[in-house]
Every structure is written in C-alpha cells, then in structure tokens.
Length: 141
Image 1 (cartoon, one colour):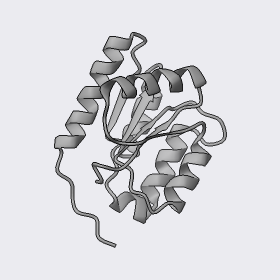
Image 2 (cartoon, rainbow, N blue to C red):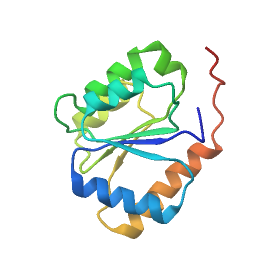
Image 3 (cartoon, rainbow, N blue to C red):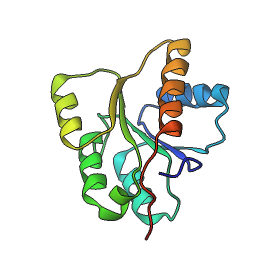
Image 4 (tube, rainbow, N blue to C red):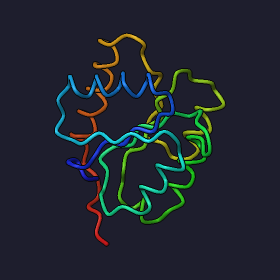
C-alpha cells in the first residue's frame, strides 16, 4: 500500500464528486485526489499507470462498468491485487444484495455516504486515518 499515493474516487454523480472534493480539501490530506466518472475509466487508469494509489473509493451504480464489476476485475488482476490497495464502496444506499456482492469480492469496506458535511468529513477522516495506520505487505515487482 502506497500511503502517499493518490486517492481514487470513482463516482458518476458530479454533485457527489464536488461534495467529496470539498471534504478532502477541508481535511487537507497531502494525497492527490483523482476522480473518475465510470468504472471503465478507472480500470484503464489502474491497469495502465505506474502510480500506486493509496485508497479507492467506488460508487456501486455507475455506467459502463458498475462498482461490483470493477471490483471483480481489480481483484482478478494479480498486479493490482498485489499492490494491496484498499478498495471501499461508498454508496448512497446499502442494499443487502450489493453488500453481499461487495464482500464476496473481498472489498475492504462498504459505507453509506452521509448527506451532511460534518458527518462526511468525520467518516472520511476515520477511513483515511485507519488506512494510514494499517500495516500492509510491501509490494515488490
């Protein structure tokens, strides 16, 4: 896990992207924040870049490649899996089917997006601090 790497946010809703951008700006983490509007764009980036992201926040319901399908492709890719990138679902709702599907793909967390700024900041801060304190295997190519 590259704790200084970018934080990837895969979210097709522009308003949610802006809300999350505001939250991360207020929290002032040094990590670059990179947004993708769909799963295909994110997968292309993840498989083609040499950059090792810190965390992936992914919505579930997205065009082209939904969050569950994207997680499956990331988990099946040995190079990506070996990088130990925490993959978290960040969704408006927590339908039981989605939660079960997510954890069956070895997701590291499933969170419902709070609508209130203070609660969102607290949640993001807890998530990022947790992963900053977490030990992971060193990835060697």
